[in-house]
Amino acid sequence: MARQSTILVITAGGAYAWVIINALASRFENLEVALEQPESKGLFLRRRARKVGWVQTAGQFGTMVISRFGKRLAQKRTMEIIAASGAQTELSPEVPVTRVSSANAGDCLDLISARKPDVVVLVGCRMLSKATLAAIPCPVINHHSGINPKYRGLAGGWWARATGDHENYGTTVHLVDAGVDTGDTLYQAFLTPHPRESLLTDSLAMAAGSREIVVRAVEDALEKRLQPKSSDLPSVQRFHPPIWTYLGTGLFKRVW
Image (cartoon, rainbow, N blue to C red):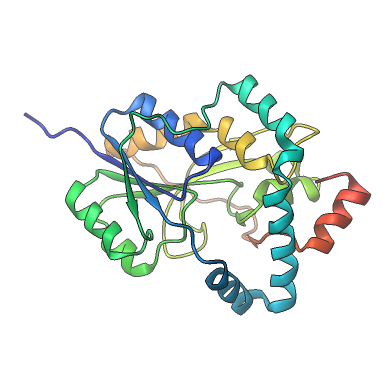
C-alpha cells in the first residue's frame, strides 16, 4: 500500500495562521502542526537594528506595541471578517500539534526527519536559515501577507493601502529560498481592501480571502506539478512602518 502523503505546517500560531491551517486541514487528512515558541523581543530588535538602525527600529517597535495593544479597537472589523468569510480563527482540535523551540532548532529538524513530510508549509513563522532549508528534502512553501516581490517582508497590506496601490493588495504563496520572501511565486490572490481595514486586520482579511491558493499549492506539491513563476514587479523588502509614519498616514490619509 502506498504511503499517505504527509504535510507539516510550521507556524508561531495566531488567528491568521489558524485560518490558513484549518483550511488545509479540511482538505488534507495527514497534516501536523509544528508550533514554534515566540522569538525574544531583544533578539528580534537587535537583528532589526543591524538592518535599519536603532532609530528606525525604535519607531517600528512603537508601531508593533500599538498593534499588540490596539486589537480591541479592531474587534468589530475582525468579527465582520469572520462572519463574512466563515473563517475559523481557532485551530481545529483534530489537528495534531507538536511544540518546537524554533523553526531552525534541532527539535524541529528532528520532527521533520521523523515525519518525512512531502511538503512543508510555513504560515507566520520565523525565517528559515540556509542550514535548515538545506536539511529539508521536500518542497517548502510559504503563505505571505503581501504581493511579492513588491511587498516582501512585513505589513504588505498596510504598505499597499498607504501608497494607494490597491491593485497590489493581496497575498502570495511562494517557494522558500534563503532570501526574505524572494522565492518564485506559485499563486497570488489579489483582493479589494475594505475601507475600514487596518494594520490590525489586514493579515486576517487577506488570509480569509486567500485560503484556496494555499490548498492549490499544496495539492500541486503533492502531485509534483509545481509551476513557479517570476514577476516583473519591483522587489522591495518592507518592515513595520515606524510610529511617526504610521500615525501621520492615519491622520492625514485616514489609512490605519
